[in-house]
Length: 114
Image (cartoon, rainbow, N blue to C red; front, side, top):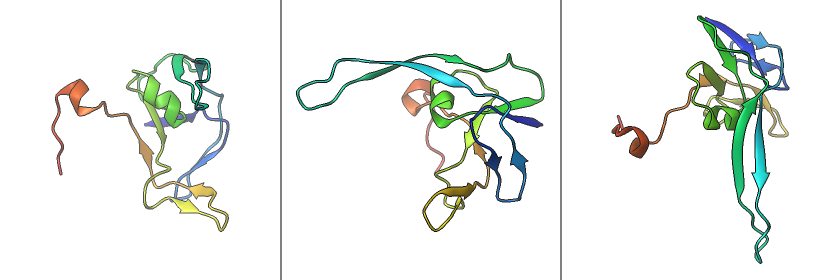
């Protein structure tokens, strides 16, 4: 499997593998007016900046791009994983793996496998 990074930063795995940025995938977003509590709603739209799918290639994208896309070839760095390594300021140094999007149970009628 080939991984191509479409985030603005190098992605480093805990095993030392480094994926340099090949481009930047972004999501169009629009916002409603702010309500009296200072809260607005965001509506996500089209993903831009990604090449067409290719057999044997996974594209590394941000979590937000992953969450709004229906593409099966996208993954994101596992930044919330307990084995993520952070520096003394809390910034991510490396991640143990990538994640893929799993739709909510109510969307897929799947059951938890705990």
